[in-house]
Image (cartoon, rainbow over all chains, first blue to last red; front, side):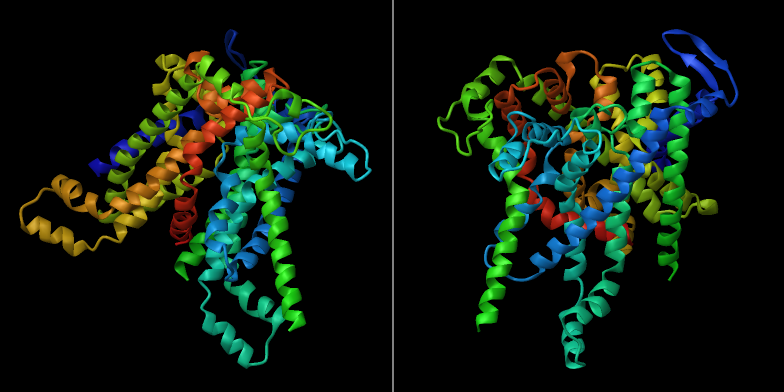
Length: 280
Length: 275
């Protein structure tokens, strides 16, 4: 029991205390540059849902999280199938494929920002080479969010890929042989043998990527700053701006509570799944 | 025969397209870092550097960018050391002792929930706490805050490794008269060695690349970590790409060397999380 104490203390200090505090602050008006917290009841929450930036942030966060997760797991599965075959150069290419996820997000953002640049970016140069017009990757309200999604896909597909490759490798080859003897082929083999046996790994990949993409902050900070307008606003970014730019701690705390509840709700579903599996 | 050949060619083509998409941005970073500005600040950027220059790396040196490297190394290694020490003790306790009222399950669930919570949610109360303790804008404060990321991870990973150590080994040590503490240090520690290395590597990568808390809790440029320095660079100097890519490449090198290792061992971590 003594051995567990330091970990318990650190985790309590870093999580339980802050959580209690954030809930308390969410019912107060508090600008920490002037004065102390003042109790205002539910006002922060009511204001929150009237704030266009928060509502847009909520919508964008879901859009971002769902589209990036689906794309990354889909592409990851495709890549895993590609790399499950034995071919020459495989051992050399495997570590290269996961380079993107090893880079710091800020490095990733600086590369993509230079490639997205309207005048000097290589992507617009490519577009003009094939006779298309230049595109405002990060400054077109209809496109900016998808440009950020693309960067996330580039960086994190390797993660889904690694998980799913491990899944494929854990399926015994004899199973395929047996299915082939029974007359299954190609598509049927994939749908009836591969997919069901890959279920756990698909679940894990979806879980990890959806949790991660839901937190999206640093790419927005470095690529678009939430703009243009509120086109790439996300909840994390909203909390950051309210709390650390406008020092509006009360409202930022209310937004934090809403976000935490959303994540906790989704995680509870996942944890129940995991526990059920544990008992089976 | 022809079909097989075509299939092979299709496969190679697919592989080529995928690898281009994956590697081109990295190629672009490395080449831009040695290009002269005329090669990249133009509507017709050069695919290959027309002239190779070391000017961007030189100006990094003159701007004392190694400060940020030093800060990053310090914070990442200290946070990792702390997490491994505390995490191993906790993992051992969770694996070996019985807890009343499923306290251990509750603790693990909480650890999992913490891992899932967005860091920004904790940012505001942590900010006020750090300020009250005088730890704002210090590396020590950051090292403690990073335990939010690495400690749950370390406990989770090490728990799996400790559970694999057969209990008989410990019973033998106990018969020989070793104390619990002694057993942990001289019997368990060597046996979970590979597990510690794996956990340490992932923890270093996590803290090396961490952004949001470093952004919020460090104020003096002298104390910045690499990601914060790069972020300021991106937002302040729109187009000094040579230098930006040079620092990006320098800060990625130590981590990229680990990628072969990660590719082989990340899966072990996942397998453990699946359990």
